[in-house]
Amino acid sequence: MEYITVEKEAADQFVEKKSRFIGTCRPVQTEEEALEFINRLKTRYWDASHNVYAYILRENGIQRFSDDGEPQGTAGIPVIETLKKAGVVDAVVVATRYFGGVLLGGGGLIRAYSHTASLALAAAKKITMRECLLLSLSCDYGLYGKVGAVIPESGGVVDDTEFLERVRLRFHMDPALLPALEKRLADATSGRVELQEEGKRFFPFS
Image (cartoon, rainbow, N blue to C red; front, side, top):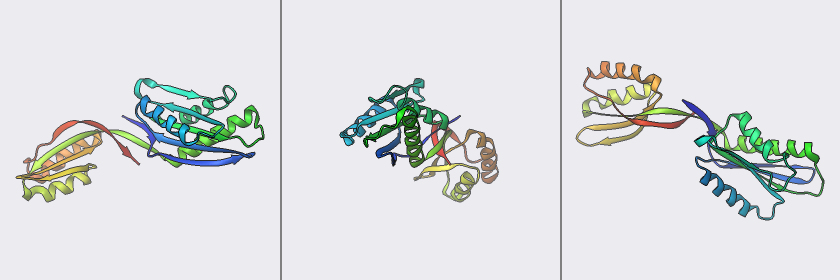
């Protein structure tokens, strides 16, 4: 199970017939986060002519957009359509416009806002989030070298290592890789190490 979102908050801009367009994008997981970001951008660009926005959330399939005073259908829809075409969810884009005195017309606005959203997405960098198993194991210090090598070689990513009476490792991996890891661990430790599943979580994959 996976989905596409963006890696970080980022912005880019361009000028079209004297109007300056600034596209800012960031990852969000709730509507509250999205609205907080939109309000922050509206405060930052308080003197802009328009702060158009759109966001798509996985949670309940929420999709929202606003033209913020631009002619209906020329601003918010192009921004949300750019998100949809990119397959991006859990993300918000604010497209800010400083009007330069030259009218762009309906088609010109649609192209300008689509381009603004595309620039913002490119700056924020698309990433794939994949659902992984959260796993842990403990082993004697004598086996740590073997175990510590087998996990990454089998596609696991170690998140935490504790050195107590025994060594405890916590890591995550694609569920499809688990059977191969279990076999390699059994071979490397003569069956002396047992894996424990601790849940699931999404992690970024390039």
